[in-house]
Amino acid sequence: MTRHLGQILSAIALATTVAAAAAECRADAVSDAEVTSRLARTQASLDDGKAMANAWWIGWIGIQAGSAAAFGALAIVDRESPEMPVNAVNAGVSAIGATMLLVLPLVPAYAPYKLRKLPEDTPEARRAKLAAAEDWLRRSAESEELGRGWLTHFLNFGVAAAAGLLLAFAFEDTDWKDGLYNFGFLFAIGELQAATQPAQAIRDWKAYRRLYEPVPQVEDRVEVSAFAAPGAAALAIRF
Image (cartoon, rainbow, N blue to C red):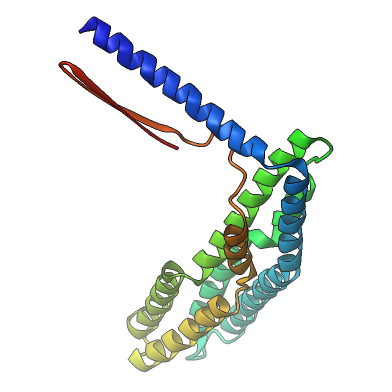
């Protein structure tokens, strides 16, 4: 039994070493010229999407913050007006929208800047920078997909519905008609924000994946599983 266990552990150690060496060989198989080419392509993709991402991000911060200020001012000035609850609720929803944009900026808006700060003066640095570039492009695509995905639509619906219910039942001067109208207004604004979000990083990441397999790193996960029974042993490696 001890002999079988020792053989299994030795086989696992050998397999892990072989797998790591194989991953390293695959990475080394990509020449420095190819790494430089891929890096230039990825940097160009991120640079091309930066202007539109910043325009969308800064533009919608301005819209949401401006709406919060305008509705808030109306609610303060016309405190006795029947429209005061509507203005106050809209000011609150707009303030939430502006805060979320500030706290969670669109990744393509700042990814090119982060990437340019990394050195690329040696082959090793270029290879590391390419890995970072691929990661930034992937994260940019994921950020855009999230902004256009079902979760964003669900949250938009939830916030608009909560505002509508608040106006329908929490104030004496508003009723279900005000709540329904305001729900439609806020939901439409949220859907417009999602629909106008850039999607270039999504397209660029898909195109990159079609052209290249990202440079594998030594730290890529290697899964090793073993099974032992009296008189038999099995070893499975996935990488």
